[in-house]
Length: 202
Image 1 (tube, rainbow, N blue to C red):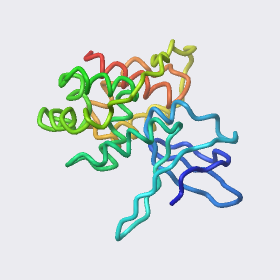
Image 2: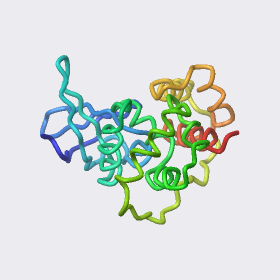
Image 3: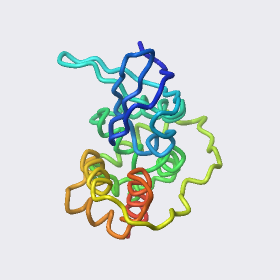
Image 4: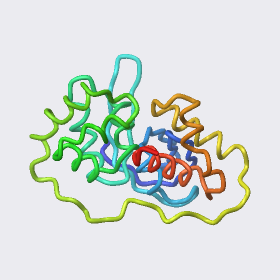
């Protein structure tokens, strides 16, 4: 089992991260929460990992912290929730917001996430509640204060749209979510702002 990697960020192309560890490039699938916490390309990074072995592939998932990985591992044990949907959930809201939604039976917030209908939200609330009895909030702020406005290359917007589509949003919906955030300083900032808008219901 590969539990943690320490290496250099080679490439960030949401939802994928490529990390060089002693000359070996590890490709990891990550949430947008982890993406926003990563250092710049070329910098050293420590990523907690979860390995899934299938008949046709070995898939490695990466997390900026152990708390996110713990929640991911709990999510994939829920009936009907696979790794891709678990990452989508963790991309749409941080760990504390998700746990709060579970404890408060907040179906409305959960169904704003792509791939989560009312029945899945109800199942998450029922199955996850008993798995999170000791979860304590970090008390950290989860919103960004905005970025300096400047013209951005179209490729940044295209990468942000592709990342949202990979999370389960339809292309037209992804573009609506990103509208007005073209001046953000990075793909990560665009995605974070778009997801925050979506969860706010606007």
